[in-house]
Length: 252
Length: 207
Image (cartoon, rainbow over all chains, first blue to last red; front, side):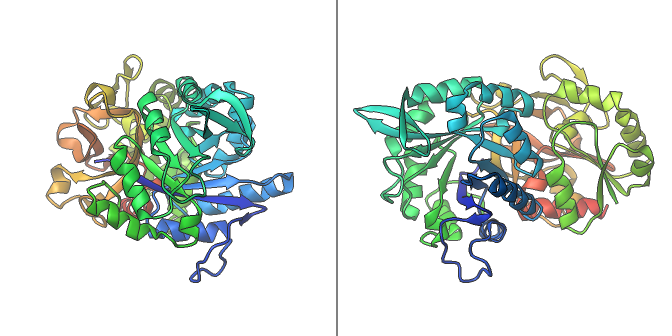
């Protein structure tokens, strides 16, 4: 039986993981390579590297970090942040990324999804979308969740999947950082609308939040989180054990 | 030394890195002399079957790989590379494979219930079959039944008969690995399957 994936997300700026961590057992707590190795050994099913660098120097550093990670870590790697062109896809895939996540880049230029899917395959193209409920309608936000595009979210996600997005990461702006659980109604609506893997993001505060996610939405494929893993509020091994106990298929 | 066949299909960075990581020299090559000198051969592949089969033949790699396999050298196809070792594929038409292992490539959609998402992406468990179920499969000597490996595919190998050494459950029984003598195929990606995948590559290097 296919297992539900647990995915730590690392925000990388100028070659360093931005959010601080409390890993006393690591020599360098903000080294993306060290953290990636740690999470792989801890049982992470996949890793997301999010490049939040603005400068071209920082971008070069990011690809170096990515290359070093992919030389030492042998689980799937998804890369996102600042992906707007086919050249961006090419740059990170050559450094060992398996999938590329596109967010604002697809809002500015929706044809990038179809172009990338034709070149690299659907499985390589991940749509990442920031969503908030505004006056009863799910809306797509751009520019790091700061700007309401006015687009209806479920419709946007469907269009991108039809164009070739092989996977969707749904970030709920409304639950992100609140640590009161994932946005179940939003995620259910997305799972009902598309037949590609859906990854839940935003809101996980404890192990029970993941159990609720996978129990309430049997169709959801993965749960993604950042700080709760970085701050060891949730240990991946404990999470996997709790999933197994709850009858949720987990790789251990 | 392992020769990873370069025929213009897919990204071989992780595969080469994973071989290096377990201490094996691995070259990505289309040089017949290097392939002949290699101890093992890996045939990688992602993308569309028709295009890959064409490139494999036009590059001359199909003949070299076939000759080396028939001479007894350990060969492992990975993902689409595995499917190319079979007899035929029905992915958008009908295409000839190398015919080194019995079986045909058909859509998962036809066998898994409609509620199952296509492609089959993620970590799934191996169930041993054939010589692996008898505990006699050297490729699996460092892993155990039930270990998880990483899959990404929309088509799978059917009709492999006695060549099947592992399957995985996805609403139907999908072929996960095949073997016939010295020729192996893995539908999953050992280079993306963490410690379990590295152990499979290690065992392959010891064949």
